[in-house]
Amino acid sequence: MGRDLTLFMADWEQLGAVPVESRAEALDDAMWPPETDIDYSVRYGPAGGWLWPPDRGSAWCAEYVFFTTTGAYREHGRAGAAWADMRPLVDASARDAMDTFLGGLIWDADPADDPVLTGGGGFFPPVTDRLHPHILLVCPPGGVTRKARAWNRVEPRLKEMREPFAAECEGWAGRPDTFEDFAALLSEWGDVTVESARRGWGLVGLP
Image (cartoon, rainbow, N blue to C red; front, side, top):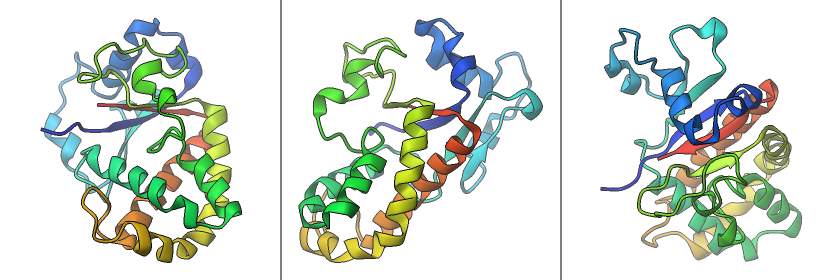
């Protein structure tokens, strides 16, 4: 079975007040309090978008459910691989903006920066077992702001990437089926970063 991605935006100050080794569990507990009588089927009910804890008024995190995927990390990995393939064919200014936007989310210029290995720069415990990682991505508020700004530069130029995608990715196994699929998933990531930046929150992806 493949790995899933559960994506949270979170108030970094609140999350940072939790002991390092308990932060991943704290996100899940905040969304789905164990002492609260919740119908857990609602977790998978919405077609997509932001899910909030039962007490939204005091919420310090929210979970994003992607419209364009079934929850599996595989689709995000495929989009990241597609970008790695096509980026040499993309205009330098658009390429730099896309690198800033996707770096650390679904693509890593340097595999050594993989949060699975680093624990997100120490914000989470480093993982020693790659088969059972505790974290898939970590992006603090400052990084989210940079990504939201990069997305504002990328979005109007997405159409320029259709030909590079067709040349390097279309029809290849392990890549998005179509450019429309690739662009739709990137647009969701754009919405996520813009909303998180608006709140001054960071992003965490758990398997």
